[in-house]
Amino acid sequence: MAHGGTGPQKPTIAQLDLFGGYEITMPSVAASALQVPNSRIREIAEAAMKMDGVLKLYFGESNVPTPEYIKRAAARALEEGYTFYSENAGLPGLREDLAAYYRRLQGVTLDPRSELVVSASGVQALNVGIRCVLNPGDEALVLTPAWPNASAIIRMDNAVPVEIPLPLQGGRYTIDFDALERAVTPRTRLLAYTSPSNPLGWVATEVEQERLLDFARHHNLWLLADEVYDRLYYGGATLGVPAPSILRKATRDDAVMVAQSFSKMYCMTGWRIGWLVARRDVAERAAQLNEFIISHATSFIQRAAQIALAQGEEELTRMLDRLKANRDFCLAALRQMPGLTVPSPDGAFYVFPKVNGLTDSFAFCWKLLQDTKVGIAPGVAFGAGGEGSVRICYAAERAILEPAMERLARFLSQS
Ligand SMILES: Cc1ncc(COP(=O)(O)O)c(C=O)c1O
Image (cartoon, rainbow, N blue to C red; front, side):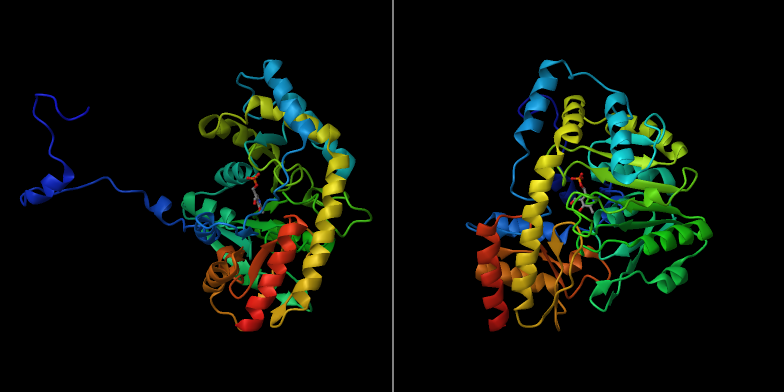
């Protein structure tokens, strides 16, 4: 109630402070919330947003808007009355379409009723999946450098992320299975990895997938694969062929989960729609927990997602052509620059060059932004193994990438 009434007013905190005799005990923010670090990508982005004319390559999205046919599908769905609650696991029709999509593109058979849960984004799929398998105090191995959200979610669940860096060997990132073995303790319950990787562009080979699965089986761990970039893959017979899913290797009894999203492949970052594939006991729980988190993904957006799956291939191939050309352009430009080691990414839309001798990637990105108005993400934001590198998102158009590469080259030659 606003002050100014006639009755007695409660003292404010400042007044209470003056009353030396009072002991002030305030409810505090939970430790599990406080132990989640701020995003260092955001710190650069927030500074960049206050400046004019920044060439923005720090976030993981292109500036291409969602295709018209998807927008029209959402508008149509609103008119058709998709404005009510749906099932916690998502519209049955969308789950059937997702199962058909896996059959067609990955040769994998899924039961749409029991093994697929629609989520309100990839990050929500990660959230509910991780929540279903970790108890407080459990440990989760996370292959890094990686988008920081999985580790943050693990912390939010009062569990402990244990980051295991992917070493760079002969120009390619690899999995250090010895380090993984050494990191396992009686509390370890989960191994999480991302392929294609943000920020590395690394894609797990089939042999690596088999070894990850064997490792998880041997140690009785859940294996969580973040596959949100599976369609942004440049190593297939043709563009559009997805990076192979771990689901090709797993049986339906394996303790495997896959987090997925419409964000990247259909330029739908702001729509918030994705899905989780999981063994049926976890999928069932995830759908039930959804009731208490988000209830379900937005109904009319689920309908639009069905149309994206049905009609999206042509537009996707056009986008992949453009992304591959951008990737090749950036690789060629970066490899001309002094002091960089530039591994080739096979998927996603990032390059992650190592700046030789760099020990503070945040300071580097900060100075680059202030001096040249080029905004990129510091490697330190991606956990163990990330410091010393920087992430450049090449999903922007050439009119942005070209001057950005020129300015970066000038900056490096002057520093
Ligand atoms: C590896 C990875 N997983 C998940 C996501 C989340 O995608 P969504 O927009 O669906 O939450 C991102 C977004 O950048 C990502 O890079």
